[in-house]
Length: 193
Image 1 (cartoon, rainbow, N blue to C red):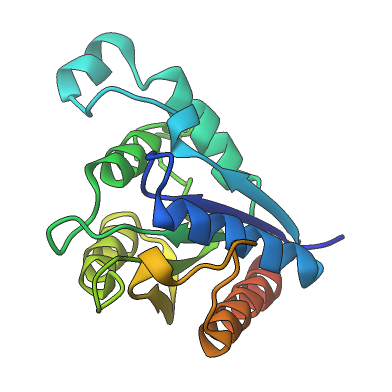
Image 2 (cartoon, rainbow, N blue to C red):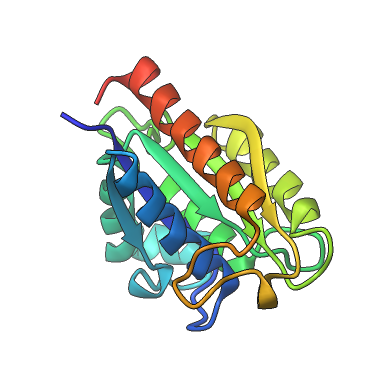
């Protein structure tokens, strides 16, 4: 059975460069023989995290649905926009709500037992690199997730993709492919299928 990989972006915007990158990652993974799923956070809308909302109503239904989707995959590639050198509110809110869905023993395990690859696409020259530092911190320190040291950044994203959604720069396309292969190999070695 093939390793299952999940791809999503920290943006719900229709024209998001990071959605393009996540969709490209999905295609690359499928071409490499992995089971691959693209998810859109626009399909998992949730209120801004608020402890009073949680105390009154518990986590929203979409937090449960997103947690279940995450747990069905051994490897996850996040394509992360950079907002003011940090994580997007949408991505942070989604990660936070999913972390509030607890197991019967009170533990939150959605981010354990899987490996993450961080990528970003940005119209600027650094490709969103500064924002990935914040995302890595949240995942590793805040949520206890295993995050690969590899990162793939796509600078000048407005002109980086061709009409088929691939990266025009062959070296960048290959770096993405190699990072996804590493994600799949690591997920298989650590967590099986």
